[in-house]
Length: 600
Image (tube, rainbow, N blue to C red; front, side, top):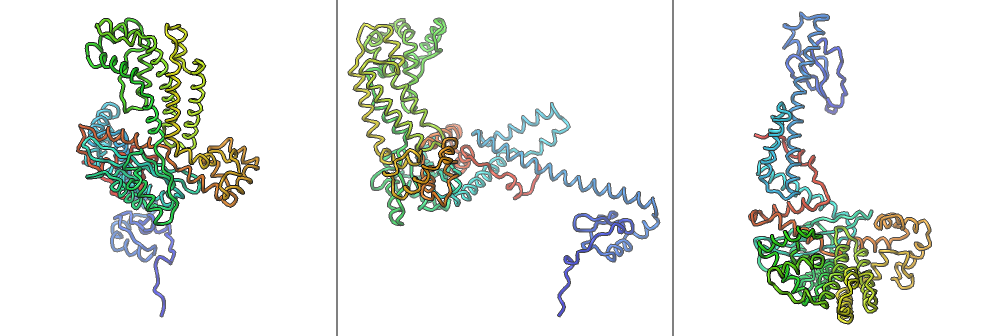
């Protein structure tokens, strides 16, 4: 039996002569009649001739020679104009759609209400009328209504989630940062951030989920949300390197805390337990609280509140500062929950101490401590030490910080404390500038040496206790931070042969000095250094703090404010994801999935 003939396989070619004979031209894969715009699928003389003879021969057969050629050229130009009109309109529709997505992205990332799209359109139209009035209709085609902006943000949020799902499948190891807080409507919101590395040491740090918890927020409740997120991203529990929390009982409880429940799950599947990290910034802040010095802080806060809590006092104090050309224009409030608040308040208060004293006396408010020479020593010393703590806090802040760098800052501060204790005992204030300045004024009372030394000793003990668990991982951290400086004999045997090879390779030593840490490990041959690369992949994922969670909660407070409290959890999730992501939504893909329409 003969095979059925397929026209597509005949490879027919359009002949130029057919244009003159039958008024046909080739348009893509079809022959199109210039006279009626009908198309013929098969390039075959018989098909084109039959169409011409049955439809157009009587009218156009009389055209011959140059007249026929001129007619063909005119018809070609007319067809081209019609086709370009449709193409141009489609391109304008797509451009309007793309503009709508970009405006929606800006609205989401700046935390503006969805209704701002309509205001943006009014602005665009106003500008267009003044600058390019002939193009006003083009700007009018961009759809920026509140429902449209809402849909665009939902689509981009889902698209980013799909990107994260896709990239998560390539992760060799990942870590989680967890923190829970309440929004303006007292709904419990759990933030889960993921940081992972693939085989090329490319780091992915993204918002994994914002989980709303209805009812209680026990460790079991939070653990269920974590499991839900891990399942949703199709992550392998065996690749979990560490879990970083704020140290709340629901997170670190020994039996029912989230970390304990995760450890139980890991033990069940015989996976190695993840490293549990208590946020280093939070622990540093707790260490600062051990340095209470209520005798100083109560007086400072009382004076500040007297000035700032009464509008008249505040205005008069600002006027006094202006008249005296003081170094600052105002005094600061103290806020306990802000990490750097105490240091800034103390520094500003000390700088304005003469002006504060004069103002309080003018108001007949006596504060004996302000005239007490020993109290001034305490204020100066506490200001200096708090400034040192603030410097450490700032060093620990920031996104994408490697745990080895954060640990180095903590260790360095512990060395600084040792040095300060030694210097204060000797009354050497070279690292305490405000105390040094007060000493130069030759106060009547001697420096309270023992009290200040005791305060530093207590702060030192607090650091040792709170960072004890982190010190247990010092060897692993040091191996990651600088594999050339570790002692081969004290590291785990699985690394010894690889370290012997690494530490005696001059080219790698040079590369280590000039490269970023993750880039250096990415350059190591996986065949020669498999265990060192594996160790580095794990360590590069660890969150040293929940800073990224705290930062995102600040955005959440801005997004879900008292004037915008009815925003849904789903929309809040999309907005936060777009606000903190390092990825870009694939707008071209989203446009290809829909038909472009103009605004109406």
